[in-house]
Image (tube, rainbow, N blue to C red; front, top):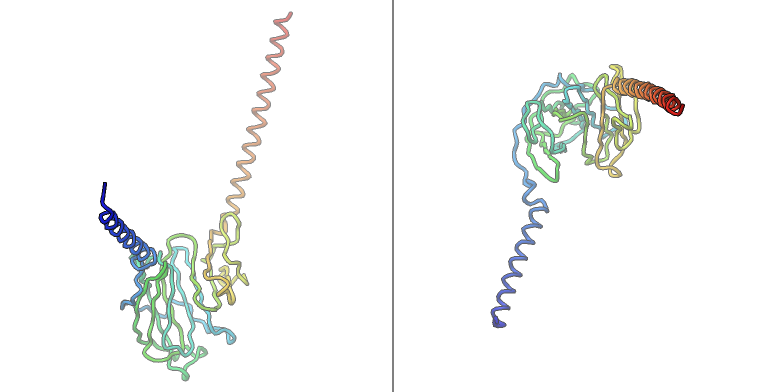
Length: 276
């Protein structure tokens, strides 16, 4: 039989092991081992403003982000800014750059504008490329890219990235108007193939025939926007296939019913002959 002192020492050691294990679990699942909470400098490849649709924002809109989606799963984001010296770009963790590199890299970043208050969006011809510093932080399935501009500026910030499938996902981090333009020839809203969540405040068709979805002041009631989209012809194709399959099933059922009745009549005839 163990002495009381030995039992006490054993219990203390056991308690220490449990405490250390619990602390490690909390540290791991609390994000200490999963997230990079310390901003790290990151080099972003500058892009050409000409590849983006830089249009002046409405006069009554101060925070607006427009996402242009393409059939090759490329996403181009355009953000008008007014008198800002820094900003954060928040994107989902599971994206790829257009070069196929996994990670938080966004492509073709453009910081294009002029010094406030001597610049405004009505005269984009006076804009020029501006220098900036950038850092990256990974936090809870989000990539946060922080931009510091060389001086307060008014203009546009634009960037690109590549999504992995036919759906779009955006984290909301401020009260803003979000506009999403689907690829030409694509649609959304079918309860089977995919719908936007939350429901957009406005839906229209632009001059290029693209579906345009708008959410106004969705944050903080919603913290994200998701859009599943598909080719506009897909519901029609599915309807045709369902109709053909239904017609085939009906014809098959009628045929087998006819054969069963035919066999039943033959059996009844043969049974009547046997009875005679």
